[in-house]
Image (tube, rainbow over all chains, first blue to last red):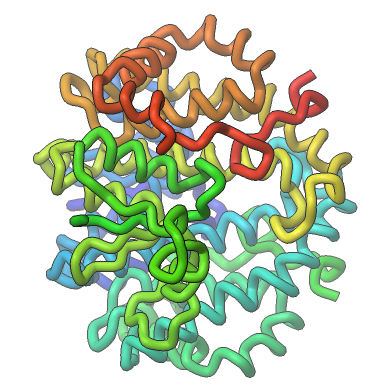
Length: 239
Length: 239
């Protein structure tokens, strides 16, 4: 296997943005923490975070091993994979622009997470429900429209069909995943929002229809959304 | 001027990470929103966010104009400046590692901001004080130790004196700024934490002593910390 991906085995989470890029690239990878111990499993992942001899210790999953490289932070992994597998433009201007889009989507993902964990990731949702209700209100009414409105503008100006123009990049895969996550977590809000975001919806559909992505989504490799991931559906947060 | 930086004129905020890199590089730049209208001021900045003809519209400040390039997202700007001005390693492995560190520091900055704005950036601190007290508690007790502990480990393994090893990079400037911000916002917590973070403190001092940085910090170009920025000092959040 050219690549080993390390991420929590039961959720899509941030690892999913990497999985989508690997799947679209069509390269084999070992999803290590989903494999059996001792070579796989969560202990194999944590050994690289906690190990004393890792020269570049990741702060948190996901991280990717590629030969001698051990790369953490979702957007850094995508920067690397984008260059290697034609999922990013070759020009400096294009590469930076796609990375800028990715980091903006990463900001959206943090905010989506914080709707159910506005106080502390170390606490349960049940321990921060009133705060979550307030944060989610702002996220639904202000932040989703702002983020998806910006994506719509980017697509309008790129000439389409992709965020960077005529060629698909890792940022497109990430926007697909963000839309899927928002649909799962905030279905009522998204039903209204999507009427104002036709280009975003078309991009989502175009990503889902790409042969390798479609095969992946239909496979057991795609973990379903659930109530442990970044995107969670609490009906009271999407009234 | 080779560069034009666009950021809010009265705060350090995220723009400060870019200013520090520009200052260390010793390149002239126009801090546009701090200049007089009509060429400067906040309207000149907002025109690039809201303008209909900007092909790569930034989502938010800071952003940097470099010739034809318009680059947003702090870490993307630093990726660009690091390559151009010797503030990043030349090897792929080194470049990715420094970027990974930068993105981890960016996560810390988001969490520092959210201690005083856990519910919504669009509300005043006074409208979210109980939530801020809870979030700050977790930030002080869990997150600051985790982030600075990780930085300490990175410095230990790099062989020092810098995060990436023997040469200073933009990530070092960013860690300096993060420490300065945390000291301003959480002086009591940091007094305790710094005893466990000798390498981080030494790096902070080494950055402050670099001639161009020292000159910058003593100049009027350095905006003092204040209660409008990302790092704010509310005594009740640092009891």
